[in-house]
Structures are given as C-alpha cells and as structure tokens.
Length: 561
Image (cartoon, rainbow, N blue to C red; front, top):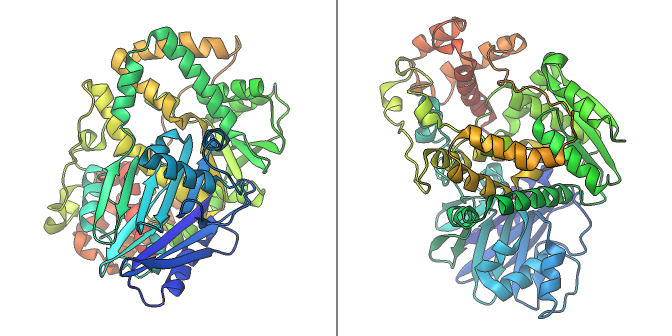
C-alpha cells in the first residue's frame, strides 16, 4: 500500500511540485514521502513515494536505488511470490536488502519486460534506468492498482491518483465526452480513458516506455492466450488446478504479521474462503467483520455468522446507518474521482472508515468467482439511454458514443465477460474500491482475483457455453470437494437498489438543484431536468440506477478544487 508519483521534463522547482503531488495522496502512506531526482536526457526525472508500513516490514526506502543494476524502482501493491523469485535470482545476484523492490530491480535487469509475468500479486511499478535514461511504468494484469498519467508542456506526469496530477499542475477539467457516454449508455469508457480531460490511465496488463521523446505502450499480459492454454487441459486437470489456485490465493491473502480483518458474508465465495482458511490454519492478528445496510435479516450476515461459528475468529457486525451514509457522502465530495454507483458503494466506503478506526491495515476476503462463472451483459447493450435525451442539451447528447468492444473470444459469453473484465464494471469497481480503501489507509486483498482462477473460469466458459453446465461443473468438481455436507449458504438476492434510500432524498434534492449554478449547466435542459427530479417516483428517475448516475456527476462537481 503506497502512492507513486513522478515527473519527467523541464519543470521549475521540481522537488516542490513533487512534494505537492505526494501531499495530495498522503493517505496512501503514513510515513513522510521520499523523493529521488536525477538528470533525464535534456531535462530531469523526479520520483516520489508515499509509503505505509502496514503491509509488512521493508528494510529499504523507496524509491529504491540499486547500484548493482543502475535501476531505480517504486512499487504500489504486493508481490506474494517475491521470496520464490529472489531465490531464483540468487544464482546470479547478491542481495543487500530484504526489499521486494530489489527483487524487482534484479528481475528486470535479468529478464526485462518478461519479468512481470513471473510476479504473482497486484501492483503498479515504476522503473527508471539511470544508464539508458528510460522510464518504465507497469500495471498489473487486471488493473487492481491504478496508475494515471498526463502530459503538459512536453512534460510527463504520473501518479497513483488523479488528484496528485492536479496538484502537479494538470488542469482539472471534466471530460464532456466521457460523461456523456456514461449518462447515456452507462459505459465507463475504453481502458485508456478517465472521466477527466487530458488524463489517461495505463491499461491493465500494459507497460509504458518513455525515452524523453516518445511514449510507447506495450501489452505484457495477453489474457486470451492464457485462456487458450488452459482450454486444452482435461476437465480433471482444470478442477485440480482450480482448487490448487484457490488454496494458494487464500494463503496469500492471509500472509503478514500486521493486524488483518476478514470482510465476509454468507455467500458461496465466503464459505469457500472460510473452508480453505481453516485448512491453512488461522493466522495471528486476525478478526472478522460483516457490514450490512438496511435490515439485518435481508443481508447475508446471519448466514456468515453460521459459517464462522466453527472457527475461533472474533466477529463484529457493522451496521451502516443513515448518519454514516450522510457523513460518507460528505467525505466523497473531497476525494471522489469518478462515479459512485449506488448506496452500497457508499456503504463500503463507510465500512472502510470503521476498519481504519479498528486499526486494520489489511482486509481480506473472497470475491469474483460467481461473476466469472456466471453470465454477463454489457451496459451499452442493456440500455438505450439512461438519462432521457430530452433532459440533455442537444450538443451534449451528441457527444455520447455507443461503446464498441474489441472481440477476442468466439463465444458470446466469453466476449461479454472479457469486456466486463477489461472495459466496464470490473475495472470501475476495482478503481473505486482502491480509492475508497486507500483514503482510509486500508489495503484490500481480493483472494479470488487470482489471474489463474479467472483464466480457468474463462476457459470453462468457452468449453461449456451454458451457464447451467458451468454451474454444474463448479459445484460437482469444486464445491462438493471443499465444503462439508449440510453447509448453509445465503440465498442469492438482487442488489437492494430497487428503492432510493429515503434518508438520502433531502441531500440528493439539494445537490441536484446546485446543477443550475454549476460548471456543466449547459449539459442539461435544466427546466425539464428539475421537473423530472421533483417527480422521482415516476418518469425517468423512478429507477434509482438513473438517479445515482446524476448524483455521481453532482458529487464530482462538488469535489472539484
């Protein structure tokens, strides 16, 4: 858990600007930020690191300057198999620290860009080569850790959070095209896009090389080829590998001596996590938490309590109340960088606030299996229009483009799942969760986002196009072998967004009315919009999903500096 930032170019008072960027994301590291500055072609390169020691001890300060390789390295995230990679490299190098950054440095020196495929975990990595004066940015396979960049006056700026780029001098301007696409088609954009004009995100599984003259992006993780390799395996081998990877994922999510919490409920993924955790042995400093919004009996908490009853883990139930939601909405206006879709996401943020008060540095849990083994749909296909055209100005409405998705899988199910994984809901959720948790200094470990598990799930979708067939395979080959007989799982429920929470209505009325005086008032036909909003029980805003789309924009406007 940390924050990365840097500048390459001719910038006055470079060190001061870097510290301003680090200050903007200081919540990502509780220690004083550390900087490193050197020459770069005809300009300078400056790196800054916000570090939080909650994840585990590290003997070397970042940015890590490795005199053996001539590389300077920064890391945000965790590489769980670092000891294994270090052991392999010890045949060629002598290590002077226990730092994972030294492992990255020597791995990159030995294998180049191919080294990242050897790392198990989630990470954003920066490598500067002092000899060749080249900068490298890398993002993990699914973009669990964010990395943004922008250019200004020929200079390159990059950071873990968009607001750090603002602090470095990038102008904060909402992207009208991106917001139009979101309000009309509910799409979050291409892997490169953000909701801010001129600010890009490094796509998941990509590298960015910069030599002072050109930016070259390169894909280092080819997901579809990995899925194809799994597809040739037998059903027996797939089941064996799936279980092995689940065991490995749970073990990774529990490593470290820092205080850790489990965020679980009563669903199938939680039951599998608990069963595998019991087999691995309960680590020290571990507690469990279950949060819920609304009625306790309508959540999965009671089933989760039953699942945990056979362990010795202390359990705390965390109700997210009306005052907590309103307080969190007020906080969101200070640091939100993209849409927050629904009260459940606000409740997650409130839960992270509680975890910070409890002193938790890491929250682990199981999430993702049900989605990748189930079905998928694309927002652009599901809705013709979220916000009716009559409420938008003609010029703004014309900016909305229905999303087009690269097709890498033959089956429709595989195609839809891939788009959801790399374009739509999953990347958005990962970015939102990282931002919320980092704001409160809590690192999230989603055990079942292990890339091998997801690759196997996609291979199954190609082999068994029917959702029923995939479900039967999963229960027969995986669930039956891991869960005891008679275990009770919470019934599946749709997200509880059928009714907009009454306790938020007064707040919502106030922020929507502020649109008339805001920076994007020209995006709407304000008279029709206000009339439609006053009748939220009917018409376009009878659907809470559409209400939250508009509220997300209102929150974003309030968060602008």
